Image (cartoon, rainbow, N blue to C red; front, side, top):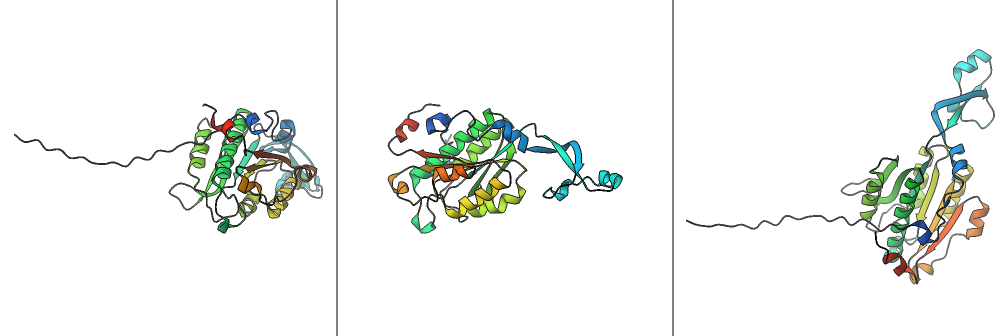
Amino acid sequence: LFRRSEQIETPQALLVYPRYVPVERLGIPARQPFGDFKAVQHLATDPMRIKSVREYAYGDNPRHIHWKATARRGELQTKLFEPAATPQLFIFCNQDTFSHIWEGIDPETLELTITVAASLANHALEEGYMVGLQVNAFAGFSDRQVKLVPSRDPDQFTRILENLARIKGWSGLPMEDLIRAERRSLPVGATIVVVTGVVTDDMLDILVALRRAGHPITLVETIGSQRAAKVTRGGSGDALRMQGITYYLVDAIGRAMDIEQLSF
């Protein structure tokens, strides 16, 4: 006899993935953008695959001492490992666009930084790397920093895009402190890629130290606006290359539409 209706509103969340483009469109060569692939394989070793044993030499990792062989021969012996079948690559994405928090956020540079990080992750996965991601930002609905361990799982790129999509533009943790905190946990010979809109002397010191420790290093600096272009840079590209660091500058000023007009 009677009709009754009720309208209930249910909030829905829409997650928009960041853009990613072929690395050539960013001015980064598609062929070996992170250095020599074979050299990376040589640096990265698999601790589960012992190749041989030799006499201990100064500078060898004490954790790699072969104690049974040492007991048999009466002298310290060191394990030698086979190269890792799949090299690991860590992308550190800096969501800060200026050195100081009171300078605010440059939206264009932040968006470009995210696009570059996503594009490099996609390219590295296609090239056969195990790719991980770390951002000096809190993960969604969490008080922990974004951290994805390296993987070649088919869903890894989706996870990377989801975490990059949630970047809000403020961290409270400088990228230098994040790299410094993760330094000791990085696998031997792992490739490090830092994508950042701000480069400081402290950051360069950390990257040079990692390079000397045997990590292939790639630094990608992003400039998305005229305001960001006026920031004093931490060092020149030539100086970084002399230190063995692969360096790229992605300047989107005046050509941002080239990236925006790409279809996916």
